[in-house]
Amino acid sequence: MSHTGLVHYLATVILSKRWRHVWTMLPKLVYTDSDYRRRPGKKENILWFIGKSLQLHKAHVLESLAIELGPRCSDYVNVGKWVEIAADRRIRRLNLRLSWLSEPNRLPKRLYICNTFVVLTIFNKIFVDVPSQNIFHKDEDALGRLLSACPVLKQLYVRLRRKDNLINISVAVPSLETFYYTNLEEKNIVASLVIDCASLRTFFIQDVSGSSCTIENNKRRLDHALISVFRNLDDKFRTSLSSVKILYFILHAGAVDCCNTINFSRLKACNLKPCALHWLAPLMCLLENSPNLEVLIINQRDLKDEDSPLTFNQPSCVPKCLSNHLEIFEFEVYRGRSGEKDVVRYIFANSKRLKRAGIAIEPSCDRRKMMKEVESMSRVSKSSQLLFSTTQFITENSRPGEYGY
Image: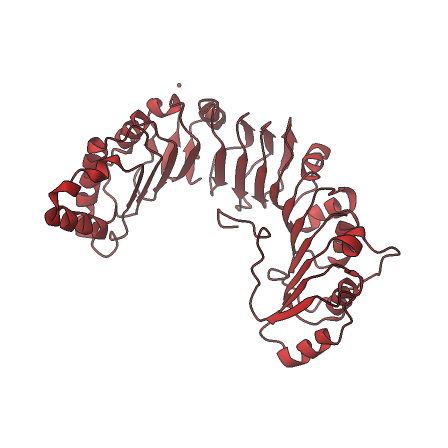
């Protein structure tokens, strides 16, 4: 609760005393130090308020607790005491974002034996020492010990920061359904990521380190995946990825081979973000290997070399997804280059069930000229709708979702 929220609460209490204790039964609590930078002299008030209000909270189950403390926070904050109180209230979701400049806090042991946890999200000044990120781990096994103490964990977010001391990361949680992993620090030395999660349904990975990644014992099929890696993926990873329904694929050079070798038999929606300069050939292989694809989005927003030529080689056979299933096609940051025109023309000419085509034209291009060129392209589906924009389109079930992807 911010200072503004506290003022509103006090005003409500003054107006009606019968509301005085209602807040103590609230299932969700959020504390944010949004006023720290503007009013640094008030920081002690909110720290006292957090501790006191948690002590007075009476709900039998605390669905979620979120605490965000800024860099001006006091050198000593008893975060461990707050988390102990939350564990006693049978906490289900805990979100800690701590960014002060002093030493990191340890999570209390009471948390590691709390059997009601579903989601644990911790950022910055937390020291993982079990009897997570900018998170500091006591040793390489600390994360594994933390996870082994969360038997009903369903969602896990791991974000490595600069100077993190993890090298071999193992995530073995049978109950885990959603896993987000981010390593955007090129200098991080991460040798391997091993995922052993029998219930995994959603997997997002962004990794620029070039480390290896493998998925073990995934007994369920993946429903949703975001893949952004700078290396070739091993056979076990490919096998798990082949079952995905919704795929957000950032096409770096190391992952191009996936388009050629994986049979995406269940894939319904694909958001392809090419970062490799020669991406048209992998795109056509992906279409050939995705017979049930219904939604295709091409997004060139991060493609840096705009002047490199694109060569389109028409396949000998029309991919089955174009003939039988594709209903929505979007091209974002369309620049009207030769290869771009060829692939759009090909998709229009062969997508018999196309219902909507959206072209988001690069704002610096000649919009009127490009609209005329695209409108002149023949579409085999006479009922399809053609839309133009200078911004991105929003297609349900085709976006990567949470955690900043």
